[in-house]
Amino acid sequence: MIKFLNLLFALCLITSLKGQSNTEFNKDSVRYLTPNEEAFMIDKETKSLFKITPFGILFSQFSNQQFCAFTFEQKIGKAFSILPSVTVARNEFLGDTDLGFSSSLNMRYYYHMKRRIEAGIQANNLTGKYISFGTFYTDNRNIKLNGFDFQWGSQKRFLNYGTINNFFSFSYFRRDLLDSEITAFNQSGYFQNFSIGFSSNISLAFGKKYDISDNAKCVVLGCNTDRYRGWKINISQLGRLSLNNKKRDDDNELELNLFLSPNLSYEHKISTSSFSLNHTAVAGLSLTSFEGDVKFQVNNIYYSPTLRYYFLQKQNILKGKSGNNLSGVYAFSGPRIRYLISADYTEIFGLIGIGYQKELFEEMYIDVDFGYSKFIESFEENRSSSNYLSLSMKVGIMFDQLF
Image (cartoon, rainbow, N blue to C red):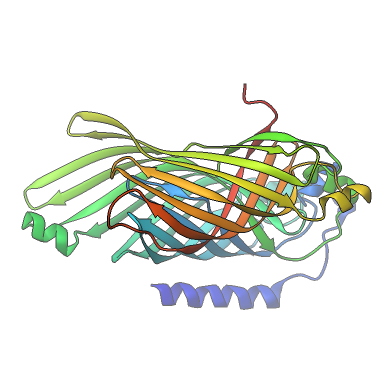
């Protein structure tokens, strides 16, 4: 399955390189182009994009995960596109870490695209509302499974190197019971899962490059805006509702789970300098219904205060290239404290790394960081965690006051 998807990925790439049009969409044919529409490149023809999407941490009852997806999207005609994708996941389970991989193949239908192109409202590109259907294969922690998913969402390309994608998803997978599960119950059977969720992500995107006016760039980037403090809510992975069904020879178990991962940060400047303090708190929450019993649980709590330094910010302010705000390339350092309530286990890591944060559209932000986590302390005897490298992206809402 993976070999097939990789071959299809290569074929799509070759096709796009040979078939990409060299003619730019005629901007004059768009009836009216606002700076906001120019920023989202609705008048620019885009037949293909290569996208890199790092995801934030997802908390479950005993573990957390970090993902990075590599996706190639190729337009087919005016309204359809095909998306082969490979995802790498770093899994942490009670202090142990490993890597997992998955591949997927999706077909998208941009259901307003054909009409908008014919009406001269936009070019033939990859910006618009869509529905999609696809299949996926996962090899993760000795668990191999196949499934499918359906998505309804909206994708927008902006400023040549970005896409923002908001979508609702419905997914299903089924797998045979593991040997340990068969041994425990002395029965064969299978496990299946239905889940519904909402996701918002921003990807680094590479496609045909165009000139964008400064007015359009300021719509997205806010240019010389000053901001000395801000509350940030990460909405990239807020939660997921899932229905699990475990079928054994003489038993059929149904379990309904609602997982929530509220992620709140508060960042404030140290005076008017290029330094800031960023406080992040995350909770892993679950609501479970099993055999008539409903249980709410706080599975884990995460807190990380870090010191940030924004490179070249003073110089850019003096040159008129930036305001005194919370945007730019930064270095960070600080502790990360996580308490797994279910396992009664606390661990402390030291963090160091670099990142890039940018305020977008006045009330949104993206925050991408790459760092190293050094295990320092565990408040449980004979238990330790591995040191690791991490890459994450947050997409969310930023505002001055929480209430």
